[in-house]
Image (tube, rainbow, N blue to C red; front, side, top):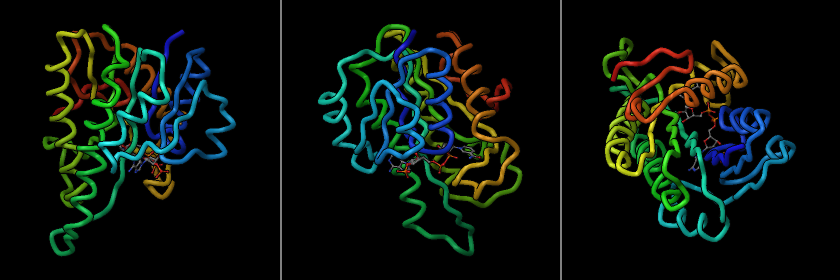
Length: 221
Ligand SMILES: NC(=O)c1ccc[n+]([C@@H]2O[C@H](COP(=O)([O-])OP(=O)(O)OC[C@H]3O[C@@H](n4cnc5c(N)ncnc54)[C@H](OP(=O)(O)O)[C@@H]3O)[C@@H](O)[C@H]2O)c1
């Protein structure tokens, strides 16, 4: 039984990951801005509310005040998606996606560092839309750039945390039916969480700093 921290677990893919890890027999600790009925029904070991990555300075205090366990896994799932084109380029929206999708996960991992052990693993839920090589349709400036920058941050973290034997993995959840996609997508959250679980759990320190699709394929940067 492992201790698992999941950030952004009140709905969507994060909620499904919390359920998956609990069903697999682990102790799951959920972090979110505000809990939900679905999350409360899961009966996790603990739910910590008020975890808003737009307040990066507050996160470490929140962890230190509420948490007295070490985590074997940290999954940062939170993210936002808005749409910008060259013709309709909303600067504020682009900045907000960087705050939530790039700086947010860095602040989140930093706030958990003292709770991680040798051989802990960090999973950052990014997106294939952040792959420069895979970009064949353009647009979505803020989302694509913020996730590409998250991929870069994850690679740096992998290098920086290697001496502590902490692995860092960039994870694409597939095209998933959630609020973010208006419930469009090829798979549901349970299928996504099953795939993410298998991929994340199969990785070892020698894979740290790599980018994976939930279907098991390695993705290009
Ligand atoms: N769905 C897809 O097809 C797809 C594809 C590729 C990548 N992804 C990535 O997968 C992750 C989960 O997406 P999803 O589809 O499950 O989306 P979702 O249902 O919209 O859930 C987004 C989650 O992020 C949280 N969040 C948003 N802003 C936050 C903030 N400032 N601080 C803390 N948490 C915040 C939300 O919490 P609140 O309820 O408080 O807003 C919610 O828990 C995201 O990183 C997304 O980019 C999704």
